[in-house]
Amino acid sequence: MKRKIAKGLMAASVLICCLFLVKEVFAGRFFPLYETEAESASIPPRAVNSLSVSSEQTDVKIIAEARNDIAANMTGPAGKMFVQNRGKTLNLKAQEKGFQFLNLFQRPLLIVRIPYDYHRDITVHTSNGSIAIDGNKGLSLAHLGVRSVSGNMSLKHVKTDVFEAKGLSGNLTAAGLAAKTGDVRLSSGHVGLQHVAGALDVRVASGSVDASLETADAPVSVRLASGSAAISMPKDGSFTVNAETASGRIQPSYSFEKTSKDGGAFTGMKGSGARPIDIKVTSGNIALQ
Image (cartoon, rainbow, N blue to C red; front, side):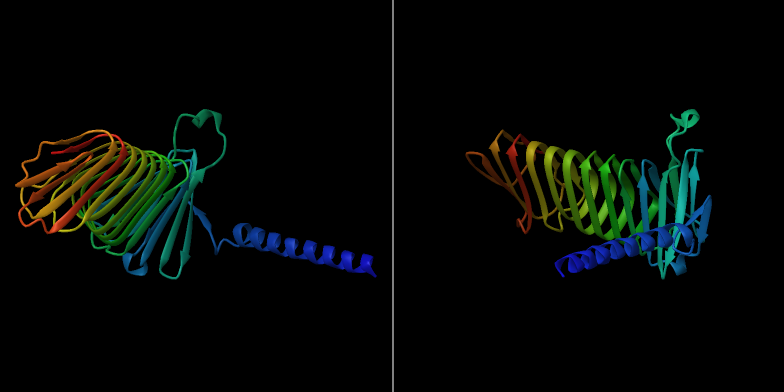
């Protein structure tokens, strides 16, 4: 009796595994409705509420320009692109074709061109590749999310309600970024934010942070475990800077109206000091300029 029960359980387990395998194989390979390989794609922006881009071993570049469609194409012979539509979500996936000796030094690049009047969501995820987003004359979004396991991320001239960036290894650079809420998480690398505005929460485990604040009309928080932080304050505004380092120096060259210092902690006030700017470094220096 026990043998029959054991055999039955084993058969059921094998059947369940086979069903999962068949589901994955048929859904991912035999039905192009789910994911279609294409050399290029063109979609009207009114049909897209969310643009999701993912890549493996390829770089991604998103460019905003005057046009009436969302267009995507691969450059170079070593890459391939897959397109998938789910409701109003457009999924683009790029990856290498496989080992090609003649194209060994030609890294694939996925280029996505979007119109200025697209104001919805964009998310980009790469496993090993760079991400570049160029808003040109100005791109305004509801949500922008970038994530890289290994590779650099850069963006410029983008305005968004929500900005999220996560990286394990690589640098993040942003110029002309305005976000109502911005969240940056980096395990190892450099964060460079030039002429940024809005609420920011930046956390880096090991690396450096260099940020210039265009305005001080929202809270800013910078946390760094190991490395240096250099923050450039706006000329005008009402804010209070609270800087603290457990092991390192604080170098305040900015002209604060009121200051106080106690060991490894420094406080500087400008105007009424309404908006908080908090900077904490466990091991490293802090420059306030």
